[in-house]
Image 1 (tube, rainbow, N blue to C red):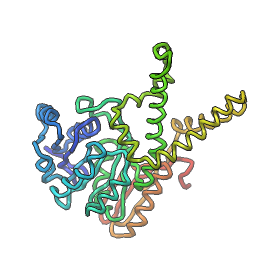
Image 2: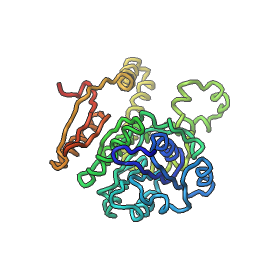
Image 3: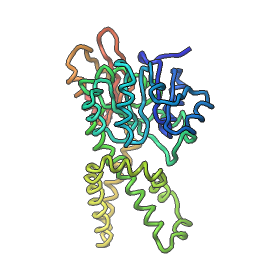
Image 4: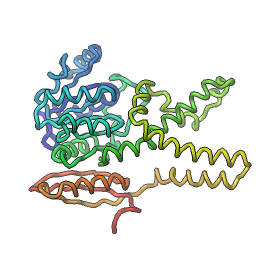
Length: 341
């Protein structure tokens, strides 16, 4: 028996690499009727052998679906969005898992799909690739960004319960611009720093000796440098303006550290590290306060979107979204230091 969540019982996943494959496995475990498609024939055969419906064309895979997850490489998403949009009904919600949102959201609107396309990004991954690295547990309880817009609130209200319930996600609502700015510093610049650290070691005269003594700080700091190079390059270039802006912020702080070292100034160096330690402590010590927020389905959509964007910008998330009797009810969680009394 197929179980629906939020009125969605039939899903399709287009592109079944690490993230797409993990989405596929989790949706099946959640009890949905899920089909798959991948441009690679070997991957399609592998999925068929695992018992998935995986036809030879994407159009066959997405026909009669309630929701389609677009999970291919970033450069392929605009074309695939158009193909899937044309092949699906108006009631079908479209979403993606790409690591940048602004350009694709604007493209979807320009192509006439903005009312049913909800840009998405699960904040999870690994330094591996491909369907054989996928896991139904990879996205467990991850922060999952969705970008609601006034024209697409009906689609957002349908998709949000699926993301929350099927994946146990902390759903973070943001505007596409907010998302791209935030991930530049939280995800994309760290990839640059990891590449710089690991690359410098690769070129060091005593490379093998350095690797022989590499401990946790090097392994943690360079981990994402092992991710597929082309995937990382696509991610960085798709958000290049914001990456450059936030890299300048990091470079300025790094120069402050370097200047303190050059000046042999222990107090200045310790001050900089105390600032850094505050952010690190806040990452693991955050407390949240739950609040219910209700909006009329037929009410002020712009105000509802503004509330959701504000929640994400404040570091909050949703753990519930339910539409009943003309009212949409959100269970929101705000950091304790920002939550109203």
